[in-house]
Length: 278
Image (cartoon, rainbow, N blue to C red; front, side, top):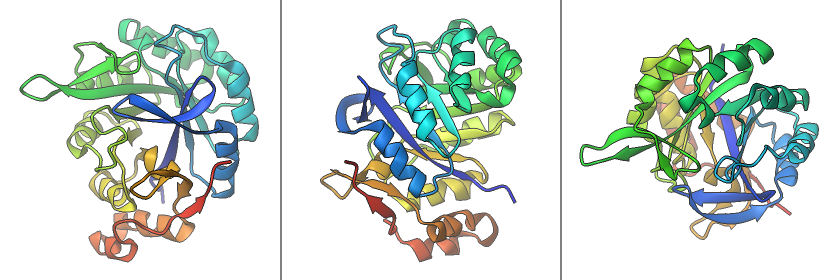
């Protein structure tokens, strides 16, 4: 049976691992390569690494860092940040990365999706949509350049366009929920899930295993990504790597067959394996 993927998302700024709140106030939390080593030990399903400055500062992807991350990583790895051309996609894949995230570059040039898919395969092309509510009506809108530039585009419509151009997966990231640890935007997640038949990964807002379980119960076999819950512990957000144990993951994914009764077994916070980042 296909299972939901539980995916830590690591944000990189100036070569260091950081965590943001609503795409702002980045807090340094450690060394990204060391974090990958720890996640290896915890048998993580998959990993997303996003360079949050590359596009905003018009920089090339940090190939040296990507190579080091891929060499250490023993799970599927998706890299995003600063990717604008097919040759960059090809180079990143050649370094050992399984998937490449495309974001701002495909807003004006959606054909980049198709061109990249021709070279590395659809399964390796991921379209990343950073989304927040805008205006009095609270309509969803896509933003780029680390949440600083609004596009006027509807994420539902753009997800369909990405699918038509040959994307293999869509990551939908809620700017409003980022780092808040108050739960996912289920309305946003549901709208994208219903709009396409592609695999989707939802990011932004998880504060507990209960939030992850709620999203799985709502949408089934998807990617469930999070940042804060996997690098912080407690109300003071002490830096500590977190990831569900195998038993806890089984309890979360069993919701697909056994219903909400499973939620009572893991509680609101869970008992995740924890290891400090050095």
